[in-house]
Length: 279
Image (cartoon, rainbow, N blue to C red):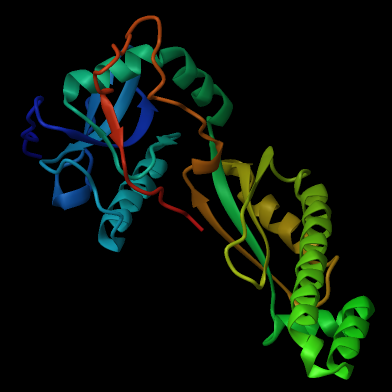
């Protein structure tokens, strides 16, 4: 394979952090802007990067897809700490400074996440009309709705607002109750769980689960076991494996005792784009 041509002075797109193995890797994957992907090693740590001429990255589908493609490729090689989409270092030296300044925290993350992957679980109400489903299954809401529609139209506006609030409160309570039941089961099959905000009206929960790579089949059994606690209206959909995005809490922008950022100067990293969501 031909040697990759790099320019140490150009900005670097960061994809992930890995542990070094003493061998210079030849990555068979292209990064954003169809650029070569390569490693910058420092102090036993490795940053996987590609060169760019762009001052910032747009969260377009093709860019996010390219970022995820690199992460999926790296996951096949071993444990990685994924970077948010859009993190750019000013140059190669800035990457080394970041690795040096955050060495302890990065090492601790590797110890905690070694051999682990992230599995996603979304549970939703599989019904054509979620409001009517709640009316049918919650007598309190049904009685309130019937009372509103039996009144004069002069009072319906305010009454309908209150009815909407009741519906929202019942849905929130059901989500919380269902999530606790599912988490209680899944904690026997994974090492940690993060609750993410739901994005759709019919979503019950969106969970990120930290799972030992060797036990992914067991996790699937756990999802099936949890699903048996609910009727057929509840749809269970799990995805993965993903890089453990929701379990990486590195703050690479924080100044340290080794590399102080003077007032008025910019940091070595820019992160102005939205995060990619594996779900």
